[in-house]
Length: 270
Ligand SMILES: Nc1ncnc2c1ncn2[C@@H]1O[C@H](COP(=O)(O)OP(=O)(O)OP(=O)(O)O)[C@@H](O)[C@H]1O
Image (cartoon, rainbow, N blue to C red; front, side, top):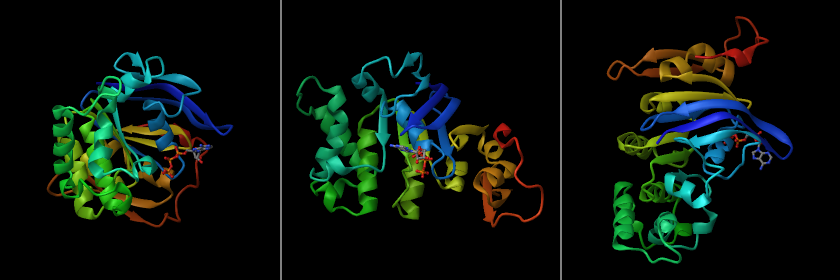
C-alpha cells in the first residue's frame, strides 16, 4: 500500500508545525523520517494514523484520503508503534498485543484462534513470549517497547508506522528491530533519531526541519554532509561501509570555518 502526503500542513496550539509536506512512500518501501527535535516528525506521522488532522493537504493510502474514510478502515491499514502506552499499563502483555486485533473484530467480538496465533507469533518474533502474562506496567522500558512492536506486528496491517521505535532498546535489539522491519513486506515509515541506523536500514530518507521537508532520497543523498550539517548543526563526514556499501556518518562539533547560515536554507533538496 502506498502512502502519500500531499502538501500537508498542520497547526497545533495556534502554531504552524507542518508546512506543505509533499512525500510519497511506495508500497513495500521503508522510509526513515529524520530531523531535529521539534521538527514535526511525530506530527507528520500522526496525520497518517488520524491523530492530528491536517489544516490543509491530504494524506493518501493508495488513492484513499485517510481523513475521508472511517477510523476503523485506517486502523486496519496502518499499525502504529509509539512511545505512548499509558492505557495498556494495567493489561497483561498478551491482552495488550491482542488490542491490535480489535479493528478486525465485529462488535464486541472475541479473540479468534487466528487473533491468538498472530499475537503469539508477534510476541515470539520480538522475544517477549516469556513475559506474556506479566502486566505491561511492570515491564522495563525496553521490554515495553518490544511489546509495543509486537502489538504493531500483530495488527498485520499493510502500513507500519514507528515513532522513535528504538528508544530504550539495547543495541542488539535496536538492530533486531530494524531487521524485523526490513524483513517485513510492508510499507514502513519510521521516525528515527539515529541517522546511522536509518542510513543502514532504510530504503529512503526524508529530512524535516521546522516542519518543512528539506531533503528526500536515498540515504546517501538525503544524508549528504551539507544537508546534515545545515539541518542538525553538526560537523559530519559521510563514509562508505566497507562491507555493505551503505553510508556511515561520523559526527563532530560544528565546523567553525565556511559560510554562515544561508538565507535560503529551506531550498536544500536532494
Ligand atoms: N499538542 C501540541 N500543542 C502545541 N504544539 C505542539 C503539540 N505537539 C507538538 N507541538 C509542537 O509541534 C512541533 C513539532 O513537534 P513534533 O513532536 O511533531 O516534533 P518531532 O520532530 O517529532 O520532535 P522530537 O524529535 O523531539 O520527538 C514542536 O514545535 C512541538 O512543540
